[in-house]
Length: 146
Image (spheres, rainbow, N blue to C red):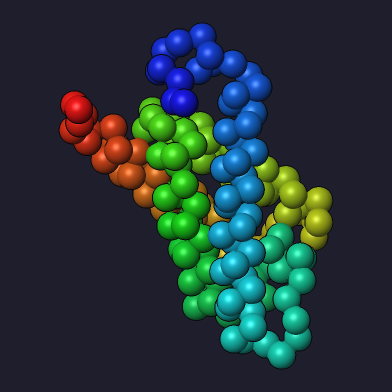
């Protein structure tokens, strides 16, 4: 059952934590699917978990752009079901990419490639735009009275 916006339950830290875990999980499922699909097309070696957290520009630029944009769109579509409000999209999108940078640095070392930082910035912008547009659309739908 949806929680009424502005109620105390909507600001419950545990509720926000569950929302964040759901979005982060959805982001990594989308990213893993994209990396799996693209890396099997590009190389003969099987993909690994380290490919999801890669901090170097080892993939060709076209494939790197493709997997970033695809995962951004797939991740952004999840926002209206979890966040429900376009005002909160920037907080959740920023948190997703913050934790992605932290985990990538933990797995593969701190990212130093300018291309990687550019792709993260572009991916954040696309995720934020898609999530806000989809949330605004969901907010402005007509209420059906039965």
